Image (cartoon, rainbow, N blue to C red; front, side):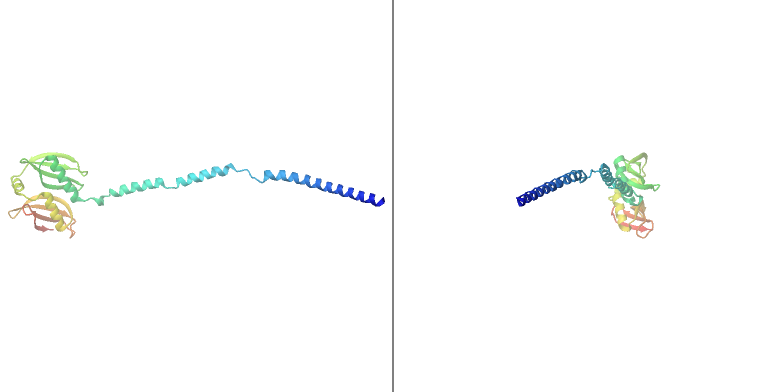
Length: 220
């Protein structure tokens, strides 16, 4: 009987200890688990999003779009430099413009004040029309004048035009066109073409036959 009571008491105590231990494990564990959940996910800072937008905007500003526009302006400015001016091409263009304006044949050409403008004498129906062509290639004014009888006779006999004579003269000595006129060279009519900055560095007068198109002489 004593042994049975002792055994029963021991089992009761063991069961009580077991229940106490289980209850103690549940209470401490529940509280930390609930507390850990909110602290595990930090709230995003709105300031970071705004900073990202600012950085993005800054990248777009740094693309250099405005600078590229400036480069275009510079390119346009460089294309208008005075160094690109070709007096021969300008003079021949003025001859075409003057002949179209007056409706005749050019027989004299002069560089007006060295500013890119030209004075072109055009023979029209027995009279002369002086056509002033501006640096921009447009007609500035026209003025009627008398046509010299010798110039009239030379033009009637000419086979080579003023423009063709200029081409021959430039091919002979180089340089840029200054002026052209009809001249009597020892009884032979020639186109007297004056050129600046020729291959020898000087101003040269090249005389081209009005009927043959050949270089008669060059001086300078």
